[in-house]
View (cartoon, rainbow, N blue to C red):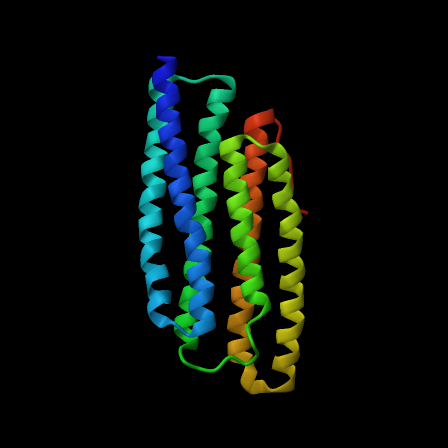
Length: 217
């Protein structure tokens, strides 16, 4: 019975890694489509959100089946409970990527009011956060989970910087207000992605230690 449980749990974790890989890709594609005015890529991100939603449901069903059949206790139960929480945060990250892609479609071919430098930097850090959080989950690496929190501080700093810069552009020329507001939404979505990635780290720490840690300020 124990061997069967561990085998099914391993399959479950592989499903989560697969979902996490898709989610990381959506972050990259969403911001890349924005930067390059690639409307086809933006549409792909939106369509792939449904695939990620389906994966969440599939993994959730596996988790519930494991709990019902194996009746895990202590850390085993925390591992499955953590899996349920992680897929929720991953799905929400994908939602934010989809929101960014929708903004790309709204901006269309309109030239950007300023070069997009810090937004792609935010996206790269957010991807790294998700990657580190997933590695920490698989390896049960608490120290790596704490590193995710430090990266979130960088995302927050860039978000504040972008806010100030875009506000300046909008105050200087009213024509910049519409796109400036949309780009602020993009930055906010990336900031929220950072928060969800931090949640992943928090759940890993709980899984390993049995104690909840709030890593978001």
